[in-house]
Image 1 (cartoon, rainbow, N blue to C red):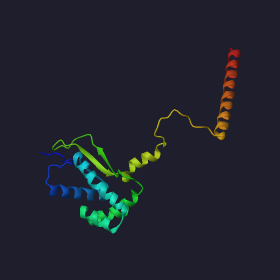
Image 2 (cartoon, rainbow, N blue to C red):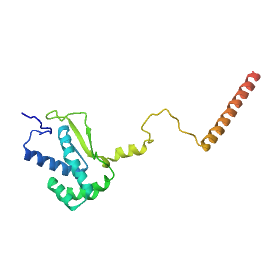
Image 3 (cartoon, rainbow, N blue to C red):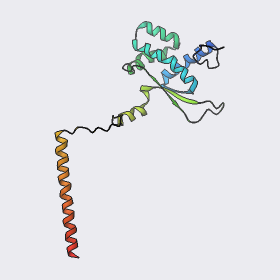
Image 4 (cartoon, helix red, strand yellow):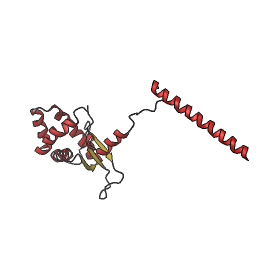
Amino acid sequence: MRHGKKFNHLGRTSSHRKAMLSNMAASLILHKRIQTTTAKAKALRKYVEPLITRAKGGTQNDQRVVFSYLQNKEATKELFNEVARKVGERPGGYTRIIKLSLPRLGDNADVCFIELVDYNELMLQDKASSSGRTRRGRRKKKKSSEDTAQTATAEATSEEKVEEKKADNADSSEEE
């Protein structure tokens, strides 16, 4: 029976699962994005996010604890030097799972990307180019005195153009 067992065993023994998650976490930290199955990505998210939170602390004990999970010196250095600085202000949610539309050819498994959030340049550019408004509120912005002066002059010039067109139309109709 599996009563109360809340994590995905991924069809592996405990030692195999720990080694696989350790290798995947090191690869994610070094490469910033990896492609894997959705089930493994969800298990990896639970494995790697506490490690990133530990890396934000930056103490020597934190480094030893993280190394005991990762077993990779380069990944540990990268995590504490670069990744921890970049995600220092973020309160959590360091990874993103992007599901791919086509399944894996061999066994039809759902495939996805798992990536570190602050390292996807395409999505960062999209956020920078957006206007900054996330809600569709009905309230209009209050106009400053400069804005009202500009709109008043624009309305006056448009009224003058309309009057000129009317005069031109009247002139052309008199000629006929």
